[in-house]
Image (cartoon, rainbow, N blue to C red; front, top):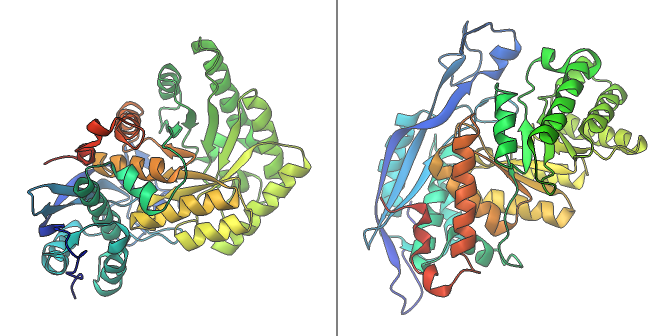
Length: 439
């Protein structure tokens, strides 16, 4: 197969000269969620026992990725990273890809298909991306994610603008770029990392990594206490009267577990969390876990209705089973949650994330552009331009499970996108596409 070699008449487009791919290290670790939920014992940082999920050689293993570079006819190297998520192979997600197999595919069949292709628009590349996914075994969501990042970088370079400008212009998103609130996640450091977030005035916090029943407690008592502690800590460390973070907790379906999947009991826990969070807004991500998309949507919608009947203004965030653009559209149309997490690596080629953001905006749902602690600095920076260009309501600080590194990467790239984007001085826009990096 090949990419169309045409181009606009009279327009000397930049072209792809070659493609280079190589295995690289990602931001955290891949975890076998099935084995962990089945009771795998933790020994220090590792888990003991054998993995249960396809693609895993251990329950916890270092996350890997594949860098892909498009060498253009002017010498520019457009860069994207093929990454996966921490909990691959569950909830309808693909297992972690084999890095060497993906490198072989990219430098063989994919490179042959792209050599000589003109670089003019991003959306012209959607057809080839779709064909690669259908025709090349192992290309998968990770391949589409990384290659689409590189193509967006190439188009921005060709135009002398930012990647955010390309997204805004090609999808005709109204209005100028604006800052995107950032969610930072604490990982297992649920107290010290909260202090960091407060000192750095993070807009949405702390995630909390509530992935163990002990962190929820009987009838939610332990979790409610933690919410109250976070609220009090903001008051104790903050001297800015204008700083009012949204408190966002990911509970991995465990409210449903401790409440025996009784929606009304789950609602009671959320009501108590809401009161503990005041005066700050509360968001609860993945309060219950269904065994299918249909069941997940039904449970979330029932919980939303239960909370409304209790006059609770907490916002529910959909996560599991919202893995594709079609999934997200289904959640939005069912009014299952006030916010939907758009986990970019799961959606594959980044145009799916753009479409998901825009669908949320049309349906009156908050768009949370997320990703994974297992991403890279490159994929995080490209994500920023998707969030800014399409107008996301929130995005995650990534990669890694600390606060500082991911926050600095994402927050700084937002500043660059705003400074050199459509509202920036035209003289400084020239070459601004290099925010993706010259290598």
